[in-house]
Image (cartoon, rainbow, N blue to C red; front, side, top):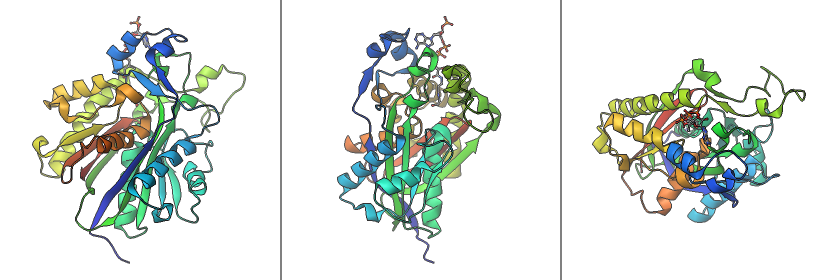
Length: 330
Ligand code: UT7
């Protein structure tokens, strides 16, 4: 077995469905306003997938974007890990297997990771481990969500917050070079599981056609998740820095899960970090859960913000409650 010295991000890709829904569009059917949504979240619009489009379709769009942009062939993918909370099917099969088939790939390992909005952070570290152990040569790590399918469109507390989309990175063995994944921290606080969940539909409480459909969609205690997010964002920054003997000056970019720009402002203030170190694109996409960080990386790359040798910290937090971060030398 040949264990590589380094495990690197070689390429990034993303896809969002074309239908763009602004806050004003939403205000036509929900008791809300552009002013409330912007001032409480920083969100201006979101992209929503049409009926009949599944999470796997969004994911395949992101992988095709990655392959096209970097001139790669699908056959260079050695494994597929999908981070999602919105699988094509309930329970099984894994949506990653559907993606494998849609990409025309055969026999390579494909599985899903369920870690809520932190899913991409978890999946990237799992991919890191698989490549570092020499199990596979490369992994495409995808974060993809069709949150509109599990959103209660009558609940203004949640429906204004989410969007659909997908992003991905190709992780592979390499020499000391660009994209090296230096370190990751992964955590969960299961005691907060009920703060963000879809109460019915699993084995705990099956779907019940006699109950109103709203109770079988995503529910969130927004305040509790907000306070959790501000706290753990700071904890992840501190932990990654101290584990790697770094100071915040050594970090060029923090790419947080895009849940609410106020969470980022509050955490930046608490950490005494200039907010310009945080990349934000929530205004255009809203909260796309596990997809938000790879979509952000794709945008940053396109805008020329990511330069070789820069240190990038990704930070995720969400349902579980899970949280964690990756440290990458770009
Ligand atoms: O990705 C997973 C992680 N998720 C998160 O990180 C979400 C974390 N939480 C949050 O981002 C915020 O808590 C929210 C954006 C969800 C809510 O913001 P908030 O400042 O905590 O608002 P609130 O829940 O305290 O509600 C304030 C008021 C309420 O009215 P009353 O009771 O004060 O009269 C709500 O009914 O705002 C009202 N409200 C709305 N008004 C207009 C709630 N949603 C809306 C809305 N439009 N869409």
